[in-house]
Length: 285
Image (cartoon, rainbow, N blue to C red; front, side, top):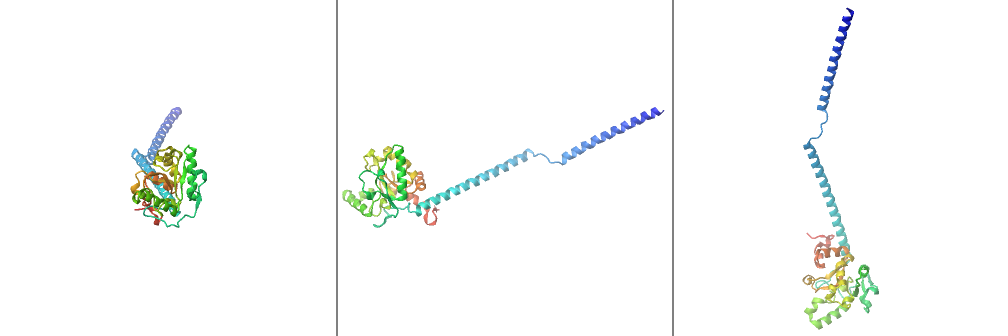
């Protein structure tokens, strides 16, 4: 009798344990479902795509702002460079409409070293403004290092020197013809101390158009802007400058200005018209 009761009690306990375990299992399952339903969800494909789109827009905006800032800084650097040239007189314009009087001579003139000059040149013609001389001699050194020997034939000319030349040319060819290749006194770039005529042995040190086709002339045309010089009277430029082609005549304007003039295919008159020099050298609107 006691065994039967004990056996029955064990069965009841097992049943209770089973029920309890099942209840716990269902409870845990419910909690898991509840937690999963209330917890943070992973982003959907649409949400991921939107996040990527916004990130790309942010990246593009940052890149746009970076490029704009680089452009602004480059423009400001260019403005400062051209104002340096302008304020120091390196953009001085001498042509048929712009002149100086017989007394004009720049204060910072220095002599070009003899090794850079053609033989038997008058000492009085070997002067240029100091910065121009430094860059001119560097340019000729660079040419020589590449086998292109170029030398000065004439740099500075006084008002009276130019008057003598002009009078002789007018007597020889007439005023109209002379005006195409020679400047009236007071309008010659050579009086500015910023211009220099050059030549080479390829043309026997003469000033000839053929110089432009020599190895030395081609080297000069290709590299002079690196040293701040421009070919002042280019091919097909007579209507703009008033003078015939002169491949031997280079003019100092500083390297940043020379590079811009050369890259844009301008003459000095056109370049000067691009900017408002009385208002900080900003572009003309």
